[in-house]
Amino acid sequence: MSYSHRFLVPGFLLPLMTVGAFLLVAPGVGFAQRSNIGRPASEEDIRNLGVIISPGGKGLPQGKGTAKEGGELYAKQCVACHGKTGEGGVADQLVMGKPGAPRKGMYSDLDRHPIGFWAYSTTVFDYINRAMPANRGGTLKPDEVYAVVAYLLYMEGIIKETDVMDQDTLGKVQMPNRPNFLPERVVWPPNPKKPSWY
Amino acid sequence: MNSNQSGRRGFLKGAALAGLAVGAQKASAQTGLTNTAAPGAPPNTHEHGQLAPNAKPAGRGVTKSITHTTYYTPLADSVGIITPASLHFMQSHSRLPQIDPATYSFTVHGLVDRPLSFTMDDLKRLPSVSKIRFLECLGNSSPRRHVNDGKPNSTPVTVQYTHGVMSCNEWGGVPLSALFKEAGLKKEASWVVAEGNDGSKYNYCIPLTKALDDCMVAYLQNGEPLRQEQGFPARLFVPGFGANHSVKWLRRLYITDEPYMTWDQSVHHAAARADMAYKSRWFNFVWPPKSVITRPSAGLKLNTPGYYEITGLAWSGWGKVKKVDVSVDGGKTWKEARLQDPVLPMAHTRFNFDWTWTGEETTIMSRCTDDQGEVQPSLAELNKHWGRAEKDHLEPKSNTHYWNAIQPWKVAKDGSISDVLFA
Image (cartoon, rainbow over all chains, first blue to last red):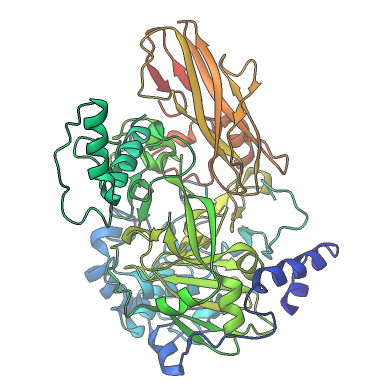
């Protein structure tokens, strides 16, 4: 259970956690031995599951797109629910800024859906790739996802219209609202423990 | 108390179907009691007991919008702490998948020594565990729940709609610790991204410490296979945390060395906080202490002054309920309610309180204190903490999460009961 030391856990809890973990896995199956249940998943099996993107962009597929291409796709596939320029409709508002002029200031609890609020550009890719268009998630090609992400970042004033988004560039986009998320490092259990409001 | 009656009928019918029917008929003849039951039984009911045709237990409510479909548990009719599986709440953001358990598997991969896929047969061979735990949508009691097809306040304001996006079941499955032992965690492993098989491949992540502590892949709900809408054939179950963590129709568990900023978790479910200079708090894992009087509650009517039992539910994602206080005079004075066994961690706890209504207008409410010493706040305290204006919770766009304000019910002179917060 060597992962425990990686968390900011009070020292006196560590022996307890280790004992707890031991008790959880120990009965019946033996602590040290595996039971060899489960089928090994091949690299191909895992590739077929599709991508999960890390905040920094690990997992981004090959492909590229620009805001211009994304605008055309947006007009066809997104306007019905999100409005002509991302102002929202039956689904969330996506844009509060303007090209070249990102929205300034804090977001209230009532307007935290637009892309300008999001902390990571990679989340935009990951979500659109898996879930959009609604109930047809997974049907967009990587180039299309890069393009529509570029379009939304451009509309929010975060990148230029000609910026190419790809495996290397997307993860490097600095989202203006990133510093406004807390805590900087998420740990569990919380330390110090202040249950409701830590 | 509908569910009580129907439960008893279910038991009697079950006993009859277990082969006692003939004996029961004979006994009736001997004692002279009239048995009016028609002989025989509908086909196949010996396998799965049915409600009596004339039993009409309260059903779930529903709201629908393009982004949320929600079924609400009828709390006003609840007794005890266990929600029937058929009445468990459900919320979904996209179409529900139909999965064949015979071909189903989910995969554990990422920072593991051996990426593995597990079938239902595999799950049933591995060490099992079952726990009675609540599950509560992290938007429960927030005003969004009153939006139906884009129309705010289009559902009745009753305890079913204010608090019914929560339920409590016995969940059975395999501890994640057992699965991860098979796969072998690498030293850097510290987070788990869970992905579902719904239309949005919904994903959410949990710290590995929590996963190893008390989480499971659940395939049983109150002793039966999961309901289809609850993630059949298998789901993640994360006790005490907002229900979104318990990803349904589990497709994979991806082990990482950092939190992945999934859409709902890092965007929609982050909340501006006054005590953090209006920065947004993300990863609000735990449901803080909360309680609600389920009966008498809004929409019901007291027909005459006199004795009424006040009954309700209390729970906390941090642990056990320590005590519940009840006020029957609008919060001026509080008295401790009786807690009914069992009092389990991260589970609904039933409380009861004797009350005599004088016939005068008054307001009744409950307040939960958990075993961490945390106390359920009033609306004013909650608003102050989260930095919300007094009426923010009435704003249709408001997206209040982890709302645990004390819920007052107003009893009018004519005995009718209404909600104070959302009216």
